[in-house]
Image (tube, rainbow, N blue to C red; front, side, top):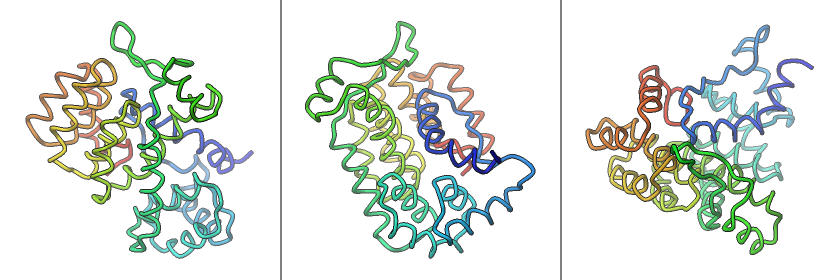
Length: 274
């Protein structure tokens, strides 16, 4: 199996794991390298653009193009969006098109629709803090079992929704850094689902919405424990004394230092470089 095939097959699993890692406080997520040698980044970009134009693109190709800011691929991505039937893949394309500056509101509206469904789901956590405040995943909770019963899904499916799928919809919108998302991201800060609230905080930091600093601090206070720290990590990306003081209050010292070092090295709230 070649490197490109390996990367493309891993991406659907890699992105949620990166999201969860960032939520749990792993700040040093490297920028995408789009495959190892012998294929260079420029070669990978050319391959991904060709695959989009041929209608054979996958999520990895879309991310390669978005990260490289390859605006020449916009018409082909628009065509892929029209043809795609998978909701997650369409979200990935819409995310890329917004990041590439596409002015057609179709793509932003799609992200907003999906993220609103996630926030309105009121999905509970599959995350809890242990006695030391470290975040852990539970197989199930009474709240998650009740939610699964109400939505007629298995507890295992509910756990996937709570940990990856529904927070991922908020991620796709938040990662764009588009200020049109501020009202929904502020709503998502109120979520009882900690990955969703944490992702919303990172999105507000990506936008640099300083008016949301008190709201992020309040969400950290409400959540407390490891979840409070995960939400407060976003405050590292604001040059504001109140925000930095809250980081020192809610985020473990070593995690805060690592995240500040990551920011100093050019990494943004979502792990990639600004």
